[in-house]
Amino acid sequence: MRLEEKVAIVTGASRGIGKAIAVGLAREGASVVLAARSEIARADGLAGTIHETATAIEELGGKVLPVKCDVTDEASVTAMVKTAMATFHRIDILVNNAGVAFFYPIAETPLKRWETVLKVNLTGAFLCARAVLPLMADQKSGSIINISSLAADERDGGTVPTGVAYAVAKAGLDRFTWGLAVEAGKHNIAVNCLKPKQPVDTEGMRFWTTDGERNGWASADKMVKCGVFLAAQDASGVTGTVATDEELSLWHGL
Image (tube, rainbow, N blue to C red; front, top):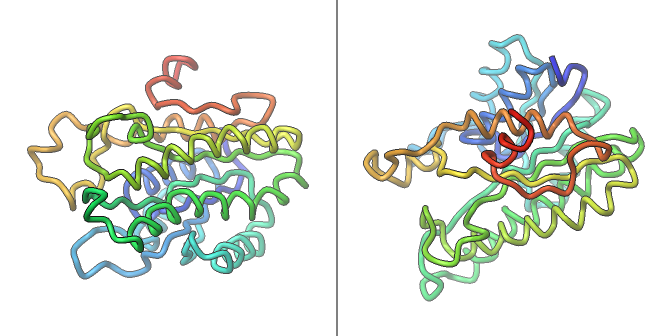
């Protein structure tokens, strides 16, 4: 197993791509910290909790720690990382996956919604990365993976209508990846950004779309494969890359 004795934190691990990557890392031997706000099932019917993801990993025989965490809150992130260290004594991998979108036009977007989208998608990644960087630097190795979106590159309505705030946040995450890779490289920490080439059929997207709208959408399998590959990197390997799962698969024979 490629990630045996490694410890990973995955944010937004209650459902969707985050859950899939968390399970994929566990399959490769990593101990996984599940960081998200969803501890109990939501009343509106949106599926997924960190405890359900934890059960899926435990059924594989993996080591897992679900921790309630609000990635937009500095104290919550700090507490989550301290809990992870107290349990597993190291952190090798961080997957910044937590995300939220607001689907309405700019003219109909309240300031609070705009700020929330930027905080979850971009500031959350900053807070989590900043919290683990000193620990990874002490270990002289690590891998940070930021989960982005093609929305960052699209100049029209996009493949999926996720809203301008989401696209702006993901574009910022792409640039954050490049800058952080430069800073972290001297500590042998890889920093990469991964985005799906096709819309992924997840619990969240099923909640917001109809079956017909999701025709031709992909599973999270390719994102998982690429996530595992990037998790195994340090600065001597692949770093500073902003790429789709399809690109990484072609470039590295995944």
